[in-house]
Picture 1 (tube, rainbow, N blue to C red):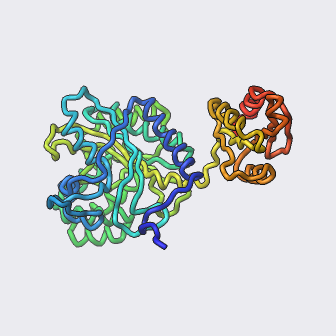
Picture 2 (picture 1 turned 120 degrees about the vertical axis):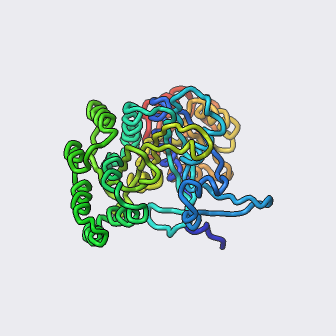
Picture 3 (picture 1 turned 90 degrees about the vertical axis):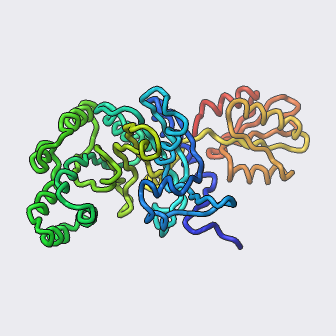
Length: 410
């Protein structure tokens, strides 16, 4: 028996309904903020990603050559594709551009809980606004989206200018070594490495910055910051909006990619693989042949959100099963149509079972059984049975439909 490829999943109806429900909440928040959905190809030119991240990323991607000899890859993330689309299709569009997307991505890595080879991201990109209100909007939107899902999380906000200021005197190779220690919170290794570089004071300053949670203290540690006014303005906007977050100036991911604010969110109950959102300000359009458009965006790890939520208990419209005798089968189709037009998921018997077998099956799959036998066919009424309580009554069709509506989601 053939199995699904490693690192992929099958989603049965209950899980798909839960995923679609959370997805719809994210879409609705994006809509309210004025972000419109876009879609890009599932595969792109390999160079789109190696141009930004280097050839080393190839080992983590699904790379292939098409019949024309072009090197292509399944997209490992979507930001690069969206900025490529902006350069191709929307350079002259009115700024700022507010775009969002929901799509699957592919990475060739070891599968584990919350980390798959095929995974989904809900993301946002704000293009063409280089201001403090733009930075604040995207961070606030990220929080609103996570709040809408119901996931419990901690939001951390930082700015790379502080870290870059302290590392400015090191060459790129030394910077990468230092960032590796900081990423792992390996302060002993950090001190040893900087000691070898004759920079023991830098180890203390970096450690203090990583542990700092106060903006003014961060300025004191890192020295003069060119973007100080904008940083302070953005933070004041976040505070004025009542955002719950923690300042963290030790976020070191993407020093060669992000240009200013960076932010991450971590779920409360996922263990080691607990990051569910990451984003920041960046400038990619010029690298792809466009203008030097300022951008700010984030991506939500949708699969990790679903794992963090656990089994989502969905309120749903009740399911109605039409149960009939042979004499009532013709009328059963009209009754089923009436319930469907009223908005209810309605199922009819396709197996030509006896009425007892139909009721037994309905008790496993539905909330209500609507019985149509000889008596109901002659009277024009229906017998509706609540399959949870066992209560039943014979009433006109419109009263039966209204009764299900009154009882509401189950």
